[in-house]
Image (cartoon, rainbow, N blue to C red; front, side, top):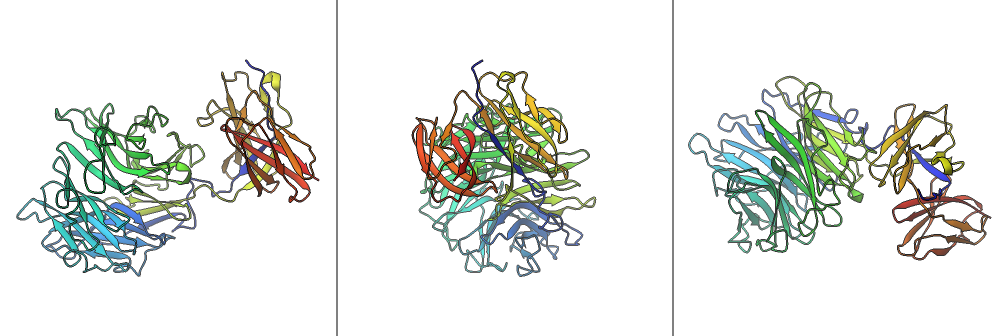
Length: 591
């Protein structure tokens, strides 16, 4: 093995309070959860949820009507940003829309316009005389009342086939409305003007018709206005269904530069369906849903994939662009996906619990694997009874809200919301000194900290993303570790700390490599000289005080540079160096 040098002398340990990422936010509802039971003999359906610009939460579904002629009607339920029913919306937080001539109607998706008005899309069915489904859209004012200026008395009703009604709905930057219609083979996309009039400049007089054997569930608008729809492709020979994406230009024609002439299909071992999609900051498309095997039992599994902007699978994600094994052989269905800042991915759905189905929230790192810094090994769950998650939402504070249902009492389903803490912007930084690098034993040594740390765990990785614990030490005993079997090539190390109250935190990542960075002079008065940097890539330099505050930042483009530190107050500082994916931290003294 090469001679290896340690190139850092300090580890920054982020000791996080009980509000660590993936824990319930106790300031939301009751201990982080909200359960709404309206006390009726029937219960609402919960299909989806959307979030307003003011962080209020709109839950979308259906509600039992008071009249026998209309067993269910479109419904929206609104909550304040902190989880209380918004009594200024509709009838004490509940807006119910009875669709004329439809015996049974249900809202399935929603969207918020720039002016705050709420669009609901779904279907209606007058089953006494005709089994035909109608595609229905209604628009609500910000107070939950029907906007009668939209469509015909606030409602759009189109019957184009007999198999689905309307599904996912989205609003373009120019306020035009795009919605998926139909299902199971004879689908289409409609576009409407802001007032609810069919936009006949789109596709074929307002319709972009989808070829047979394609069925789409999710519809999103790219920043450039192109329309991406996701669902499944059912081959002509009726073999296994596949993930399917199509992209349309703003005029309603297929974007031939995407995938194979506008269409992308991805095969799994079993039937596969996309339930939701989202865009990353770099334009890549992430999708989630299920892959299902029928072998005497219904056996769905989480399925997630990521695509490049041109529609090709992104092989840097998961395994060849896909992941399917989050919960092994457990029953699991993914319903909703959201992308956080930094392109970490949130997925919500349900999985098998010990005695019932449980709503589950998973966070993936940007490479597609569970993020061990979130919840318990990347997974969070907030309800102790049978539950499911239909939507994952991000508030402007970066808090995570899940919306779905829960069976608190047998035979009923209540609206269930939960809010989770996300990555904290303010962390208490405690400095632990690595006394020396045990070069001949391939080991690290650190200082035990006073405080509430109960144990340390040394974790190792070959790529800085996938970690395994190789050593565990109680707080009161050892403070060093010799790695008896280092990996071939690069070795990354970090410390996992567990506090006495159970909070888990991680140090920064230490990479062991065959280069050494030097700073001089030390102590320094005005200029700090740094050598050993990358000569091919830019290096980020950050000066941090011992309280964890950022005092100065710079970028170096060569293997050596000078940093002017004349404005710093005389004291000890840390220089954080981010280079080629490695993090190096050096201590220096400002005279």
